[in-house]
Length: 93
Image (cartoon, rainbow, N blue to C red):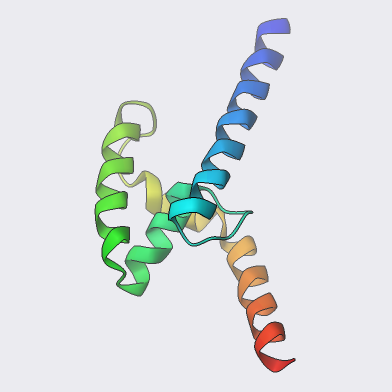
């Protein structure tokens, strides 16, 4: 029980660090991990998205298998909808 909670918290810290990295070198959105942000950049045709996806997918392959970034992007669908709605709201204001 104790180690399960420690593991859960460490994974949460890793996710938060990934979101911080996404702010710095990814899409800039604080609610999205670098993996999902890299796939979004690739989807938009941004050059750094292509190499970030390759790098992140290779680093994560031993633990999560192939297509880590694409799966992360899919897992963030609700967040992407929220981000787009906020962007439209700012553009409309």
